[in-house]
Image 1 (cartoon, rainbow, N blue to C red):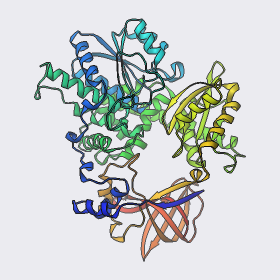
Image 2: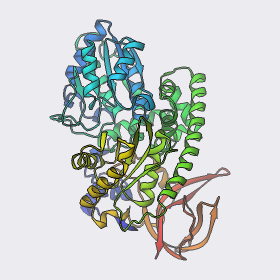
Image 3: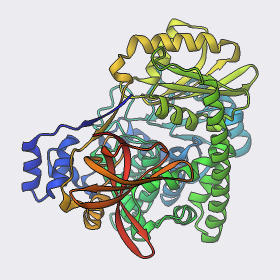
Length: 564
């Protein structure tokens, strides 16, 4: 079941924003997203929360400054998704700007799994001989890996944003806004954001030591295209602080001041960097980078982001594009198989979905889980074989159901079922024995039933209500596109009643419509939907500027439609 709802907003707050010079529709949209003060819209770097608020950032800065002075060898241990790759590139580029001797290693997810494990420490020692290991976008759960590094006389600096478990690793320093007692007011930094902050802290420490002054210090804002990409692709909440990081990164992309790898990924995706939006980062650039970690080896993606050779960046971007096409084909086949498994799935009797297939690819199960969650609107975990009698699961959740906490409950109710797990509210990963799948599914369903009410299992399309005729213009769309929308600050979706003049199906899967409202006609498209809609329809839609043959026209992107 799906229903359309209209976001409520404070008329007083909207009026106050309007009086402070905000466009009337934007004022209403902002008020509906909880924004009360025009200051929260500042996208200037000086409005960022100061690094000093991050627990232990001063210790990390002093320790790294000492390491650089002593010419110690640092090795970054990265994660294999887009946030991990951008965080690694930011660490490498930033630390080198500050004079460090630094290298990196990224675990192959299929051989070594996630995080700083004892096996990764062993591999890092053999291949890179580090004095110090710096984790990016991982490490907060790496109790055993940090212990192994300590045992070998290697200090570990953990930079991460994931939620910690009951115990913290015994690292030299941990910087993570989500660790206990950290008073940093934005808990939503991505891994790449945390690493960027560590660099800001380190640079300030080096200024204090007289190594740089305000004029000679390296410019860390050159890294913001990478910070923006990782932040958007990791789907963290775009609170005011993250919006600044993303806005600054987009500004660099739009003015052509981005790294060769980012420019090459835009080009290979057929997107124009001079009109870059968060949507481009999340749905065009990010997935091409992610594909390397999903199907082969993320070091390819990291090389793309760290090379200064435009020709090399373009060659890698093309390789990543090819891998991404392959990922799409695998995903499509897996989705078809999943639908066969779920042929008799009854939404009335099931609160959760757990599905496994022997032929599935570990690197793509997360995307398939996401698609199934969207289709059935249930917390979903998809599993693929992981060897040695184990299967690996990747899960995606719905609003109001904290997936990592749910897995924690499963492990308490059925202690022998889950080998290991970790993650966030909306996405998590786990490993179980293949013969424990049924026991896991039963326990997960029980946790789902206890936690979810029927109304939470109904998809709600939240809209911003009706849009006045005057704003169906490309100028207004440009104004919307200049804002930083994303997770937790969702892009506007409007809702109005239309007469359906014509409708036809394109490529067997998209519905092309001509809609009429008060005598004005609009082209519309509903992607991934082939069933016809009633003659009079209530339509939830986003505005889009569609360029064709040199002419730009307003097009409505349909999110949902029902009988009016």
